Structure formats: C-alpha cells, structure tokens
Length: 324
Image (cartoon, helix red, strand yellow):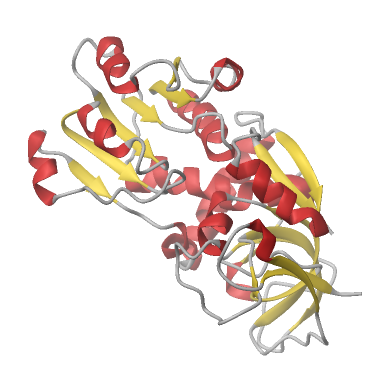
C-alpha cells in the first residue's frame, strides 16, 4: 500500500497521521520515486507547527529530502530513467512511500552513495555547501563560529571546514554533544548550557571575535552571536530551532558594521547549474572520506511523530532517517 504521513493541521507531533495515496502518474516534467530512505530535519518541525506557511489547508505531507528508485518518468524528462537511483531536497512531500516530483530537483546518485546516506545529506550537506561556499566563502585561516555543532548540519560543517583549513568554534548542549562535535573537526566546542558562549568566543579569539558566525538557533543565541562576531564580520542566520529572533533592529548591525544574511537552501537548489555542481562537491567529500556522515537514529516512517519528539527534545545527534 502506498501511504504518506501527513500533518492534519498546524500543531504538535500529535497532528501527524497516516493517509493512503491513490494512483500516482507523473506529469510531463515529473518523476515517480519509490522512497528507500527519507531525511528528517528541523525544517519539517517549523513547517508542521505553523512557523512557516502551508501550501494546503490540511493533510500536509512533510519532509524535505529523500532517496530511492525511479519508477516512472514523464515524457519531457531527460537524463532520468526507470530504475535510476536518485536523491533530492525539496520542501514538503517526502514523508511517503512514493513521491511525484519535478525532475529538475532530482540528481542521480553515484554507486558508492547509498539511499540511507543520500537521504541524510541532500538537505544537510547541500545546506553546508551553500553556507561555506556561497553565503560566505570560507578561506583557510578564517575563524568560524557554528551553532548546533553536534546536529546533522553541524557535524558535516565541522569536517568540511577543517578540510578548508578554517579555525572553528562550535557550540553544543552538554558534554556528550561537545565531545561529538570535537570528534568531527571543530577546534573548540563551547557547552552553552554551562558557559556564556559569546564571552568564551571572545576569550578564544583574543578579544577579536569571529570572521563569520552561522546561527540556526535564533531566539536563544542571535543577540550574543552578533557580539561574538568581529568588526566587519558576517552573520549567516539560517534557522530558528529555539524560535524566531524578533528583537532585531537594523541599527544592531552598526555595533560592529556587520554583514547579515538570511539565505534559504531552496533558492539555491532551484538553480539547476548550482544543484549539479554542489552535488558533485558534496558526493566527492563524502566519498573520499573528507566528511564522514553519522546516521545515529532510524525510525520507521509510521513512527515519524516519535522522531519529531526526539528531535525537538534534543535527544538526537548527527542524522536521523525514516524508512518506509
């Protein structure tokens, strides 16, 4: 039976329910994918609870990355064939056994990239790619602050930044997560539950602050992220796991002549040339061992509510996947 896990309405994990999918025939530019693995991310929770707009009134199928086998293609699709192994990242629609998707967002997987691995890196790995290469082009010797360093994005970022030659400072909650981040490339990791991270960043940088700060936490961190950034430094805000930071004023940037950006992954993957080039970069650093991806949690698709609760309860590390 083809089915999906959908949010009946905006709310907590309890709104997720199983719905049966009917016949799925691809349109001219679409591919039908049978999922083998599905990624799970904080983005899904932001959408589920209504922090981001819904495209439908009810039964929104969440999930923004997946991997599997092409079962059918539309007549105008080129470069994809039935039986191809593929991966993608695109907002909503992944929490399902099967998915119709615009083929422009789908990339073929190399033989050495499994479906489980692809479902763990298409969103998170491509996020790191646009953060460290496009939003701010990190160079050897740059000093970087990266929040949520023990999360799926953070662990990939730590390793990739190390390969570039950056000086990296991560933040994480608790000794176990700090140790995990340290093992994944960070030079220093600050336990934000016991230390004021901005003061510690200034100590570690001899009072200078960092060249660039990546903040996906939002409300709990953003004000101090600014103060931990050097004059003329850059802040990249790309999430809000603690809630939106609503106290920001343009004049806050004048405190250090800061640069501030709020990029979105789907504005990058919507450009096919970028998607192809970034996917090649990502698959290379994963294949050659530069980045080792840890899939630390796996839930059956029908248990997605439990997976959401684990993620929001900060009971996860690394990547989490769902399996149909």
